[in-house]
Length: 386
Ligand SMILES: Nc1ncnc2c1ncn2[C@@H]1O[C@H](COP(=O)(O)OP(=O)(O)O)[C@@H](O)[C@H]1O
Ligand SMILES: [Mg+2]
Image (cartoon, rainbow, N blue to C red):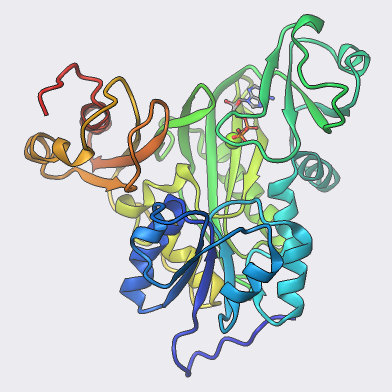
């Protein structure tokens, strides 16, 4: 059951669970479109709570809290994948449109469920198996990648295993997914937004670089990508969105193999780090289309505005004191076309605290500008004077 969203009535309230940077960045198009947001934040003053005045602080694993926050809202959506499935069914039964719905979201919450569904659909995936004992890992073969099926993010919960000596966490009762170690050329991402009525917008395929399991840099579109492979990647994402009945943004993380194939790594059903370039590089950002899709409004064009857009994350680096604001005079003076997005988070080594987008018609120039700015904000250029 889902709440009717009347296009003629007052703007419906959208509830967002989780106060991270994704919820924060949803606030920008929500303000522009005049759509009120109500937030459940995990602690006072977290990233999204700074910019969404209508917020409660509470526990997203507690159904009473979820009911309280979503009361009077037409739709509920998520900054992360950790809300228990049974609570989502309860909200749905109470007449709140849960987007993405619980039966779709479970494929982004549980990597074993995702592999099973994609394999049944015939979507190309790395060879994989659920393993419970070291003997089963040995039988699967080395080198391999072991993953916790639930709760991992930014490479936490992923182990690269050469042989039996480095098998972690087995025997502890956790379900572990073993995958062949893919010798990929690079990682790609296919981003689409899908509305409940089935309209889909597909952004250009991008290339992403991870460091220590954390997304570091994204180039849109993926340079030198075989046009046929790009179409295939978009079709895979559109098909997954349709068959799993995803509503909102779906990001499909992909490996491009050295043999020129694409394999699905994992799914995210929310705006995704590999889509941050769309804020400045495409006609409609992933955040705006996520909102439009939630409310079953017509989607905006996903086309790129410029030949190239480069996104580089600002990660807490060597500089552990000082404020990111102090980076502005130099960064903005050096590059008047630079777009900066900070998350209102304190610097901590390795923590995502913001990102920059640089766009233009020269890829090398965009790369240089975005990398310089991100390193400058992170304090990795050796200047501690600010
Ligand atoms: N089967 C694999 N083969 C090679 N590298 C992998 C494999 N699975 C994951 N990785 C690497 O580890 C990163 C994190 O894995 P992922 O499953 O996306 O976990 P997370 O949920 O932490 O993002 C990937 O982006 C990729 O760089
Ligand atoms: Mg991932």
